Length: 176
Image (cartoon, rainbow, N blue to C red; front, side, top):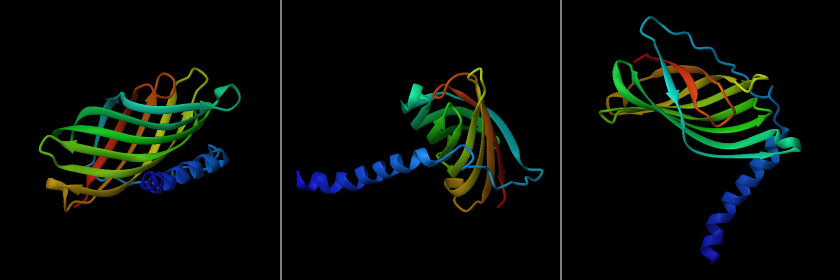
């Protein structure tokens, strides 16, 4: 029991800290501050991404605050090859709008992959649809992309409430 508590307490403390500071974030706290200039070899693909796993909670007066995590996955042809695109996201929305963070990974059929951290903003319209914009910071690659440097960004939309599928436009460019 003591070992279990030793492992669990730091996780519990971290979760409580996130919950304690999350309500202090407003929708203006996270803005895309980086702008990527793409060259002629950049490629943009459109991907339909349903949730394959999600833990979203609603709290606050009239359940207007949504926070939690969402895993979205979609197939696409990226940089000319069949691939799977995955987003592991964390949201903190008020009335469907607000900041999100997480990771975006592209994995090709040969097992090569690239990873990005993402930081963005969702804005919900009165009809429940949302627009989504995100900056991406390259983490690294594996397989045929192990020594590569990529840049990317994505924008997207959702036609219904948070947690339903999104359609993204992902732009990637291999720099080296």
